[in-house]
Image 1 (tube, rainbow, N blue to C red):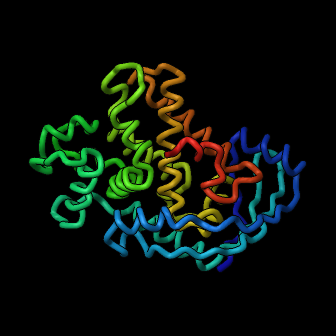
Image 2 (tube, rainbow, N blue to C red):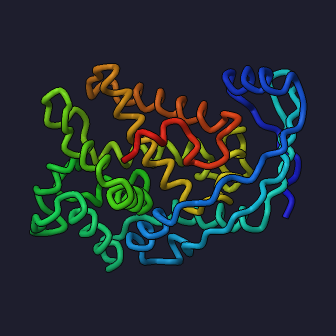
Length: 287
């Protein structure tokens, strides 16, 4: 299925970057990326149990079509052919963002318990509504109230992070090697905010075609890895923490740090040699 011509309002940074690369108008042949590690397949299959929400764990390598740019004043037109695979995966991802956390659904309860088990192995949880959750960085004793901002996918993202990059997850959760402050920012609540930020950045909260260069590029990356959004979430978390530490930020500066994190992610996604999420320079921060 072809997506018709789309008029995109680009940020100043994107306009300058396109001018630098394309000199006002040219065509890029995007190459096929490398094979995808089965590491993410195993983690995601273990984490998510609802195919209707999460989609199937299928890895299909595709050559990426050509994306053409024509620069004119403060706008750019992106000609993009969307493959059936890309269209289906984008639809699944957007469907995930529409699922609210439902405390009455068994699979949602199990996902929340799985998050606790991954965060605090061997420690018994005495209830889905408990003051114990506060030590993970939830704002109250009922985590479901924090999910209202980004829905069930924000829980999925945290669980994916915990199971796929457990060392990084535990490091941020426990702030090992930090400034000696138990909670510089509420870990879990910050995670929900990161999910929401990514949904906005990638236009996942709309039914329209990609409106920015970044969201258009992400659609192509999605064809290389169905779990690209979850991987990008993990990168976003470690980048946010790194910027937080470098700035020696306070809780009142959280939104400023999150904005800086988004800018860093957008810049990396537009690099010439980034064809997969794993090609992003900040992916190396994950362990």
